[in-house]
Image (cartoon, one colour):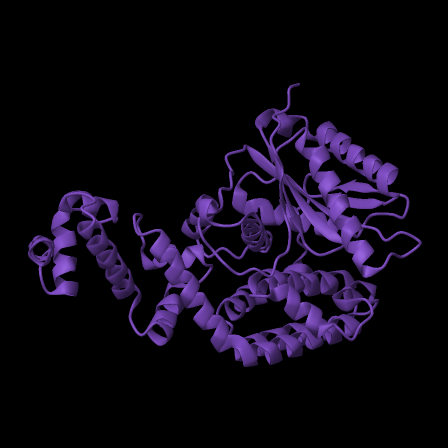
Length: 423
């Protein structure tokens, strides 16, 4: 069988909080934005198919395969524990080698979840799906062998169930996470059963009912909603002291969401757990649900305290990013729903942000910027009126003329005559 070879995309955490199209953004920023995308995908946080498709297009992600399978991976600590700096370099090398090995065989996306865990999304064609029971074990065994040989590192891997549609990738991810807990000490790789969906009723009842509330609180930087929602999650965990695995999964889900959905999420987490020798990773050493709930409360208090002091600045920063995005994309369709989807915001919330921090509405801002651009083009004689209208994304010259006159008080033709007289 001939396998489709394609460069694998690796996604690292980053504190950069910017968004432009791929040809206008640095490689590091694009990685961070794609990471945020996959965290949303793993946690079923897309509000609509439109939002999902728009972000795929903006981020240059290809989901045209016939199926997808997610592997959840944990980098095991060596007996001689390295320093934090050494561990960071080691983990980076481990993920890079995993990427290089896989990408020589199959297309995939790799998302670093933290400095011990990463996820691989295998993009499979029909022939790969048919052969996955032998193909994926062979690939992952090769990855594990290479890591042991080069770094003396052990990698534990759980593989989820196949997903027939991109939005089902989250189910494969959760199946892998659930199955991971069944790995024995002498095992390195474990696969889900065909009939496993990776989600138990207990798991769903803990996190699923709070997922969208947490997402909205993060996206809108709503400190009160964030405090109340995480409090309810912690109380739910405390009421179920026998569900340690589900409690751990719930806490790690929220951790990944903080890291990826909040501006400067990585730094926020580091600051909150700076008094712990293990940092946030102390979570993974907790052996009781009570301990996990207390860890979550500490995360809640730290996030709320930091955001309380900084959320106005973050909101202004968000508006500035949207404005910059608009200026760089005046030639394409820019509806409120579509731009909100690009930035993982609800349309109503984006509209409110503009009204409060831009001193004008979303539509008014776009019209103003397009008219400013059209005036620059007319001054440089960069085309006829209908050509300028088309270049700036207007449906036709008539509509462009109406908007121009509304903003400037005169028609484009009258403005051109004025330029000629002034010159």
